[in-house]
Length: 195
Image (cartoon, rainbow, N blue to C red; front, side, top):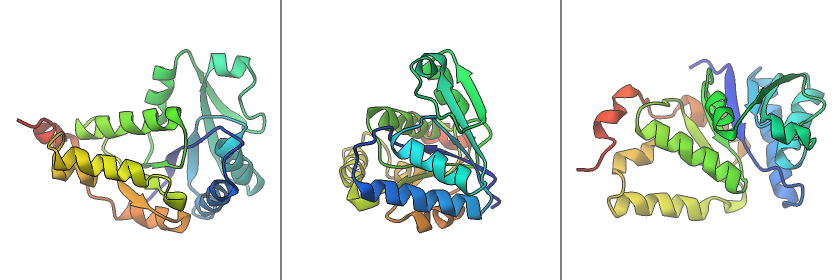
């Protein structure tokens, strides 16, 4: 599998633990080394800022996608030259998933979780079929993994749906996880419902 472009979801808060910044920097370096273009939320702060700074500093390719109202309050990263501004958050989320080869989710807040769950929902319906990798730095996403397992155990989704995403603990596992992800296609709609 050739990986040319991925989308990265991550936090905008600058107050999170340094361990998350270090993991973001490591992932960014891996992506630049592999000549993978990154699409992200366009922010200048937090893990978003670290992602963009590292990619720019190392000569990589990064594109920001952000609603105009966020740019108006100066949340956009001024060093990112490839930028697309949308009217709404909904339009932004749709554009994140166009033309990418995989989606990687780093630790983040409610916005990151919302974006991730929309992608998982679309994948369950066969409308998004690319690998979804969840970087579980410092066990951040352990409660999420437990919740998703409970959804399957309690029959809110099928056990098969646990194959829609892959949790990894370290940034250096992301590329292999993308390459080894379970193949998914539009036929997923045929088993999306539990009847």
